[in-house]
Image (cartoon, rainbow, N blue to C red; front, side, top):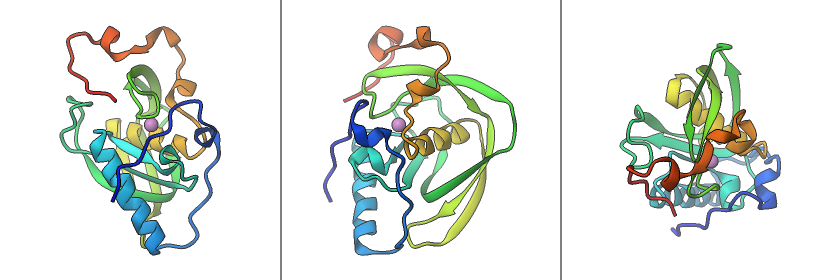
Length: 177
Ligand code: NI
C-alpha cells in the first residue's frame, strides 16, 4: 500500500466539510485505511485525517507510542475513528504546541479543551466511545477539526506563538518533511 502525498494548507479539500461514511467494511474503505496508516507512519504523525490525503470523508486515525515529533507526549492508543462525535466534558482550556503534516515545518500554540468524550465507529462499523484527557483530548480535537475544514492556525489566539520549528526550537531535532 502506498504512502500518499499529504495536502498542505491552502488546498481546497482541507477547507471542506467532509462527508460521513455510509458503507463500512468495504474493500475501498480498508484500502484507504491502510494508506492512511502507512502515510501517518512514514511522516511520524500523531494523527491523520482522510481529507489530508485528498479524501473528503469523516475518517481520522491517531495514536502516539514514542513519536520523535512529540518526544514528551503521553502515549495515546492507536485509534481509527469514523463519523466522530465529540462532547466536551469541561470548559477548562489548556494551551500547548501543535504541529500538522499539512502545515509542514511549523508549530503554534493552540488552546484546546482538556477533557472530552468521543464516539464513532471503527472501519467495520462497530460503535465505540471513549473519554480522553490532556494530550489525547488535544489530538482528537485537532484531527476532528480537519473533518470540518479547520486547521490548527485557525484555532490560535496568539499568532506571535506561531513559527518555524527550526527557529522556535533550534536545539530540538524535529524531522519534518
Ligand atoms: Ni493536522
